[in-house]
Amino acid sequence: MSEDRFMKGSEFIKRVRKYGKEHGMSVEWVAERGKGSHGTLYLGIRHTVVRNAKDELKTGTFNAMLKQLGLKKEDI
Image (cartoon, rainbow, N blue to C red; front, top):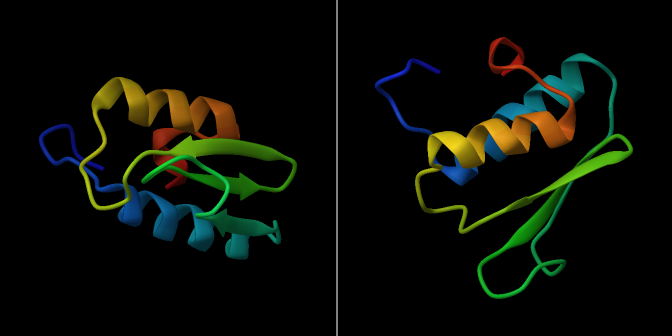
């Protein structure tokens, strides 16, 4: 992801799924496991909450989600 391009929540989920598939890790998106437009994304034994998947992720939120999943920007 370039610094001047923002990523939507749905794109983040898609890239994490691709990463999980490439590394043999289970990935699950559970929209019901959240309140309102939030849902939970599981990567192996780690998880993070994704805000509205249709909205763009803010930089701090994006970085926090990566940290919770144990990933780096370069991974996705």
